[in-house]
Image 1: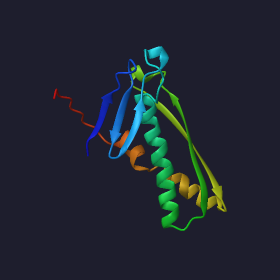
Image 2: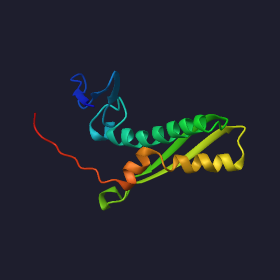
Image 3: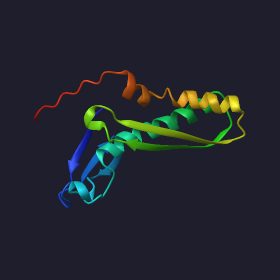
Amino acid sequence: MTIKALRDQSLPMRHIVHVRNHIISTDGSVEEGGNDAGPSAHDLYDAALSACKALTVVWYAKRKNIPVEHVEVSLERDASDERHGTYRLAATLHLTGDLTETQRNELLSVAQKCPVHKLMTSVTTEITTVLG
């Protein structure tokens, strides 16, 4: 799969990201010289984790017939030590439905094992960048 980020010349930093048939506007913050016309690259990285946790919980609950109704993942970023090698993300899982404490803990465990969480913490990512 190819994902493309194409510059939108109408703003100093804004790009339009194309993922399959979807488009996402991304931009730098005003402090970074952008217009805040979309989430930043860091925001998208963090959002990928939130989305993966939420989607994984719903997928698992459906497979196991767990009566979850509402799923919300709140994520807090602490990038204060990023330049020293530590980027902290704290996720809070909010669930509603007629759930037992055992089911709630089971869904929490599943959220902690979502594919993006594993990708961010357990996998070596190799990136190459070339001129086209």
